[in-house]
Length: 429
Image 1 (cartoon, helix red, strand yellow):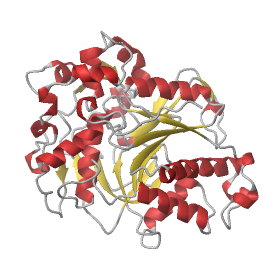
Image 2 (image 1 turned 30 degrees about the horizontal axis):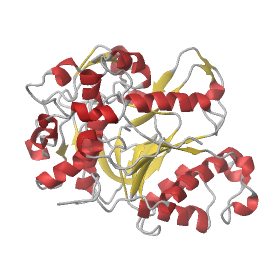
Image 3 (image 1 turned 135 degrees about the horizontal axis):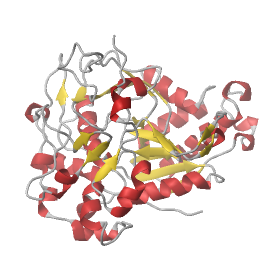
Image 4 (image 1 turned 90 degrees about the vertical axis):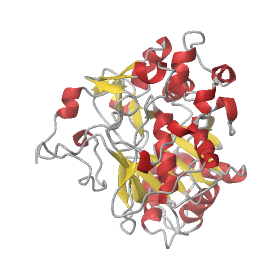
């Protein structure tokens, strides 16, 4: 089994991959960690513009780049070396207080999101051994994104004997495929505990992400610290005290007892409300324009908050403590549900589940991609029909998969998954 072992990489490896696209892709099309040392420069390490505080942010700024028609143009953002690139702005909603200023030491810590493991100690990808198609796709996406990862294998439900199930779990309720998925995720969590990893992010093999992921994760890190009331030095760029960061999900609910929100307005990577999907979503009305009578609001707003529920586990990060808590509640005690539902229930009933704590953002940052072919390729748990003549991604506007050829060429213009016409096809009311 191939193991792409990953550990924390700091210093010269902590460089945004989109900037690397422009600086290095023409000379070395397939980026590796080694050549990042040549791309380091003083202004990349200057944190004053990279991590602006909420009370300094201007909601009129254009984040990440200019989105026109169906394309994201990063040319000015990443080639104008006389001034730093623009980043998504952040504010916090009333009723709440502004976060305290971030110290230079804390800023340097947040910059670890630019390393090859996204600021976590390790990146893990789960895939069934026979899904070579997905493993190929993930490998190309990750390499173009300067992500190093460890490959762990998925489990088929038929290989999990009944005596290895937690008390109460039945094949009839969870399904054999659901049990296989549950066991694979628990194996990954056990790997984290066995290796004493302080943190790790776990990707499922069909994950896809935005071309500007690391810039998005700067905001996730700032949001997590704010929600966790983290001041001063932390061991993780995302703060201390969290059990899970649900970075890739299909449903999200905010903790009702905590009304604080980290708000990221004018984000061109946010897809329109009517194409996000999801049965459980947070209240977006304070920031979002549901119809033309509220021109001061924006459908390009993302918010982050304390989690009360999440579904789908396309990508999620866990701390060492969080991994142990999930193993305990989903394996060592009575449990009879799919893995992601169990995770959601631990968030919802966190007081009864070892004070399980999570932070999430909506809309999600990590989506899924599907290859061309029959609907059977779409899921290894559920059955899907139909035929897809072209690959496509869900829950993302500028997915890496759609822009692989552009990344090969070193382009600074990236194509959107949804046309502006589709994005604007909003239902009034």
